[in-house]
Image (cartoon, rainbow, N blue to C red; front, side, top):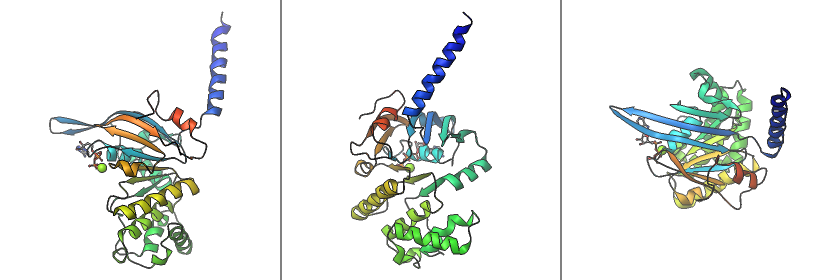
Length: 275
Ligand SMILES: Nc1ncnc2c1ncn2[C@@H]1O[C@H](COP(=O)(O)OP(=O)(O)OP(=O)(O)O)[C@@H](O)[C@H]1O
Ligand SMILES: [Mg+2]
């Protein structure tokens, strides 16, 4: 009789090895995440128990109306704000357990940001802006410039290298912003309404660029938008309303690194995959 628990343990261990081979590990894993803001006597449930997985090489859109909790969620995934409750694992590391200084180090080496209003430094040219994140990493000036120019070429604005932000169009500035997000080779790129300040034609060009970067550079991109037609450019959509996930769907044409079926299976823990 005593042997039974041991046999059971071996059985479950073998099960987990088999499972591990079949299923990739998510690069972002969120479980039962809550963010509750206290405003006077009121409590705002900005995130109200959210769980999902994101895999390497996916382009994911977080979609929802204004005030639904999109930015709150993105800021928490990027380690900018602590959750009230719940787990966030990035590349196997529990970031909800990190101290403020550990989070700064985590962000510098793992995360790239693309902002709605580009957030370029007005006193620096395009090349200087893109090279900026490498300054914190002890990279020599010559190497910083070489990498920045390579990235400007990748996003199609090398001819703007010596232009200041106010000498570029919105679309060109956002391409520079994208190059800056990529320059330190982050594990994940976060973008909050990256085309929010652009006209529809330029938005489409920037979204196509993001799609290409995810595929060719094997990047993982998490983008927030309130606009369904913009979310359609992503491989997977996580829809939120009042701080809750209301649905999740994966594009048929998804071509992530290791196929689509696993994503469909593993996207939403125990939940519905289609809208
Ligand atoms: N610092 C804060 N203090 C109190 N309430 C907050 C705070 N930040 C956000 N909220 C509230 O949390 C909810 C979600 O806000 P959030 O900014 O995440 O929405 P959003 O989906 O990004 O909206 P938008 O599309 O307008 O940017 C809102 O009700 C908002 O008022
Ligand atoms: Mg927002």
